[in-house]
Length: 250
Image 1 (tube, rainbow, N blue to C red):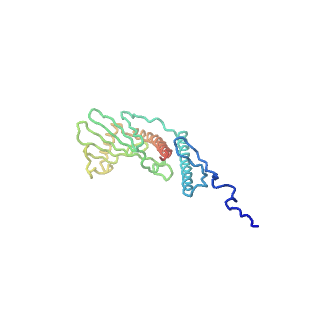
Image 2 (image 1 turned 180 degrees about the horizontal axis):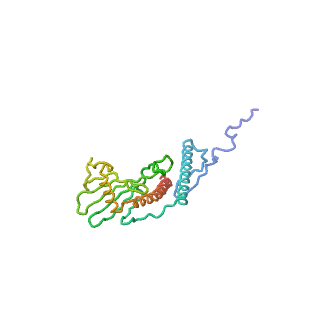
Image 3 (image 1 turned 90 degrees about the vertical axis):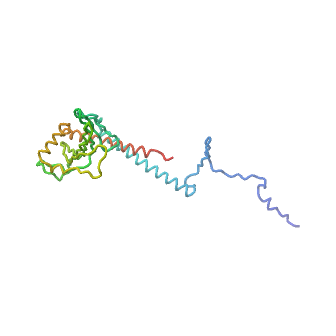
């Protein structure tokens, strides 16, 4: 007696009409947005994993910079706070020029002169002299400020320009020249070195500046002002860098 042959088709527990259930990857449904995959980074394709790791590293790097900047800003505010910048020195009006490395001062002298001064922040230094007046080799230094003095006559004409150095307690004249106010020649003749002039003429030119409030007190004022501006600009710079890093790339 022949053994009945079971159909291969019947050996499966489901028919062709049965539905196969496939477990789907969970997704997060957001209103009015695309579905967001919740696949673990380790199960994502290599390119996605590299992007994910790169973003994590960048975020950690930027976070560390921001932390250091916040700490430095707070330290400066706690240990070396800047004072309120003054806007006057005697008859001079002071313009702080925020964010710049210089300031400007203006005043009138009598009825015939307008004076404009531009002074840099500290732009150099020399070793401070010792008790015998000789430049030492220690860590103490004298900071330097460059001053450009322009004196205009109200009736017009040429401008007297005097280049000076402001040391901690004195003004030193370096050069003086006459130029036209509207156009400066490419290579103007600026006269000899100031120290080459006759001693009596040098003294007279110092008296000329002193009569216009540019004397030792002026040098002391500039150094105190620039110390304060240096602190203010440093904190401003750190805050600007911090603000830039905090901005997210769109």
